[in-house]
Length: 344
Image (tube, rainbow, N blue to C red; front, side, top):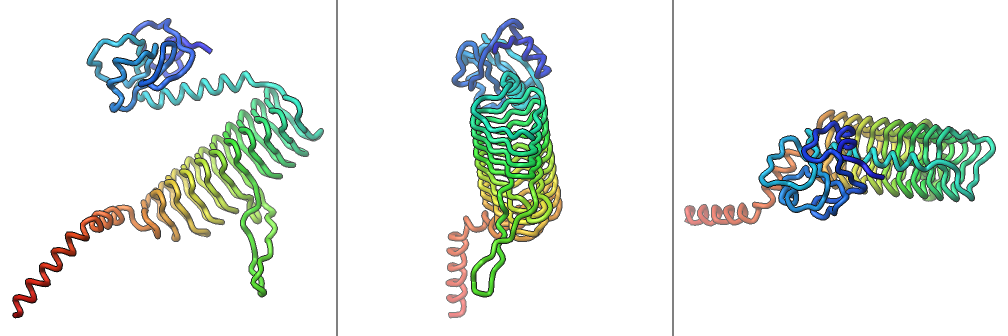
């Protein structure tokens, strides 16, 4: 697909400096881009490439001061990074729109309800009473269990498994290898030291505009629902246990684990490799630093770091002091020697 500078400027609401008829057909990093490609500059670290790149069109910040002449056509916007992201999303949608129809072989139960303009890839399994909304794309080798509902314009990438009774909203993206609705980790200890499995009878609800990265797992509730609320973004390799609730527009980075029945508020930020204990509440806007171990509830807006986690500002001060411990020890020894000599 080819796009002219005029078309791109319309999509990102930018102004053109250069040839409005210039066209591109692919994207490239500004330091590597070739003729016929579009690039962007948002990080000042890469500014020198602005004058040497072979890209034909470059999206830049309106505030960018040009130090040398540039051959490329420029599209100026308030925020180049956001504009480029918007353009990539638009390009992705256009590609997805071209994928319509049902490939063979697939299994689709007779009771399944299929919307308009959907795509179902080869070797997919669609169970009983499944509902698939208009414009949804289900890629090859996916499993959609009985009674699953999938909304409109949702993308289910290859190898995703969605167990029975789960509900997926509109414009959701679930990346390859993710499992939605597997059993929660529920086992009751017995007198003889063994464990008896507790049946997991609930489901998972993933609301609109959620994105879930590759190879993540979201477990079904024991009773009720595990809920991922609208706008949440979950990275690759994240474990979300039974009966967890993740709030609106909360982001969770890779390798994090959320234990059962924990309630996470809106606009929370959780860094990579963080671990949250079960049955706690994380207030709206809280920030959990990477590799933090959170064992207690957090207030709205609270920031924590460390394992076990504690106040972020105190953690930073403690780290600064820890780096100076050898010098502090030396000074302490000197003071002890001085005190000893004074007594003598």
